[in-house]
Amino acid sequence: MPELIAPLAGNVWKVLVAVGDKVELDDEVIILEALKMETPIYCDDAGTITELKVTEGDAVEEGAVLAVIG
Amino acid sequence: MFNILKELIYSSGVVSLTGGNLVMWLVAFVLLYLAIKKQYEPLLLLPIAFGILVVNLPLTFLMEPEHGLIWFFYHYGIEQDIIPPLIFLGLGAMIDFGPLIANPKTLLLGAGAQAGLYVTFFAAILFGFDLQEAGSIAIIGGADGPTTIYLTSKLAPHLLGATAVSAYAYMALVPIIQPPMMKLLTTDRERKIVMTKLRPVSKLQKICFPIVTGMTIMLVVPPAAPLISMLMLGNLFKESGVVERLTNAASNELMNIVTIFLGLSIGATMTATTFLNPKVLFIFFLGLFAFVISTAAGLLMAKFMNLFLKDKDKINPLIGAAGVSAVPMAARCVHKVGSEANRRNYLLMYAMGPNVAGVIGTVVAAAILLKNLG
Image 1 (cartoon, rainbow over the protein chains, first blue to last red):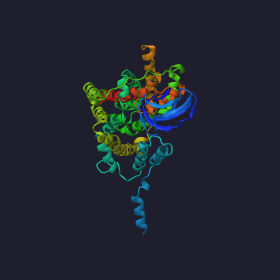
Image 2: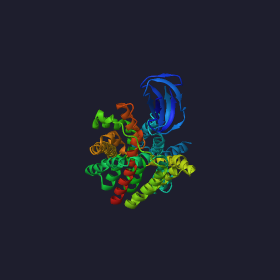
Image 3: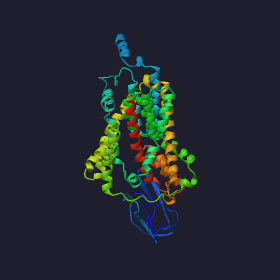
Image 4: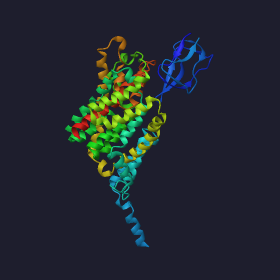
């Protein structure tokens, strides 16, 4: 199953989707905050969010799985 | 009754006000507006503006040597060089050298972006500034407030207000000054370059970095010691992971406390007589020139490095602009411009490499100027 990976380390600022939501390629899924800057993370695949691995406020490392798209 | 009133008026500051004081009030109000309404570097601009305001109230003697309250802040904090190193202690406790350790060649970008300093040094001499003044003006190009204050207080204290304010102004104006230059000097294709993932950096490497780098720099350029030693100590606090309280104290409480005294003292150096001087305008102009040349040098240095790098290792030349030491404003700006070219381009951490290298580069440049001119 395709996974959405954090491209940089930061804190999860906003989660814009919920489990079960349909997402398209290039949809904004999560906004990370790093160095006081909001960085939107875009979907690499179309599908349905089957799992969210993070919630708002979590600290994530680069390469961490943010969500699973089925 | 009339005599008492007359006495009161003459002992008040009102009759001693000069036109220059009123102009400085205006400057203070503009800065207060920028700080409060526009939120440009409010942590510094607010105390600076207030310092300007109170020092331009006649007969308050706040900056009277050996007597005035703010003079003592200024004397012990800045003239005796206490505050800028303490700011560096806090900065060290906040910054992550990881991206620089992972990609050491970005050190070249931090060094390349200091070119503006040297160009401006000679430009300032052409404009009639003496060597010490030229050195203090040139350092503005690094866009590093504490280093600028440190160097100016040693070389040309009478210019302190002007160089400090312009250094902080250009730090705040990074998002306005840098993007047009980035777009001018790079192609769309270059801006789209996605960089290869940074290698992971171990905790041991992060602990060794401040010790080894600090010792090396201080052995080679000893005058850099006050700033570099504090920067590396702060970083060692952070990376050691065992003194979280000290890390927090250095980066939060202590940093905030000294920021108050720094801002107020800098503002208080700006009396009408020292600040309302055509030289000050030149300082702002030359400072901007230094900053622009430094940005361009960083970008061009990155493009030059790409000539020697294999396709898969090519760097995005935008990160060269982060070689000026405005941390993390310059890195943020790179990230933003990069994501406009390619929204899946996340350059922030890659840009932090040259950005932290820029801090070191500016301190070393300041130390070299100090050694030769001080």
